[in-house]
Image (cartoon, rainbow, N blue to C red; front, side, top):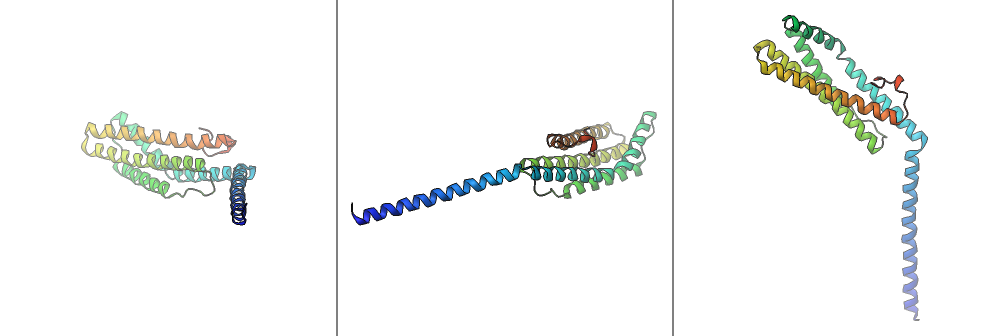
Length: 193
């Protein structure tokens, strides 16, 4: 064998070994990242992050409690042919719109797995959409008070039904996620509803 063939063989072998070691180091780093991801501390941190996010969702929603109660009282009077107060309906419409915007502006927490982050985004969007639809429902109820058109009350009912669907979906998503992480649901804001 000539010296140049032997030399090029050694270079190829050295290059092959270097590439193999580089690939092995990437695999080891990937495995270490996976171990870190599923380590107890990381899951515990992610669980607390999710519970804290749920509290933020709940705190925003509480801003609607008073006006929601007023609206429910006003709407229940419709059975007695008493129309809701236009001022109350407009206040509710504005409150629900404002809350929808707060949900939209709510930041998704860092440090979550891609799967958990996707669930949190879906939950946030469900709450945002629910309150946007509640605001729309109040618009249609306001229109009904002003025009007494059946179409307005039908649109109100459809918007409320869809809003309730999104709220249920949002609550279910966060509670299911917490349940999978082993959270004691009796101590969460939505208490496993």
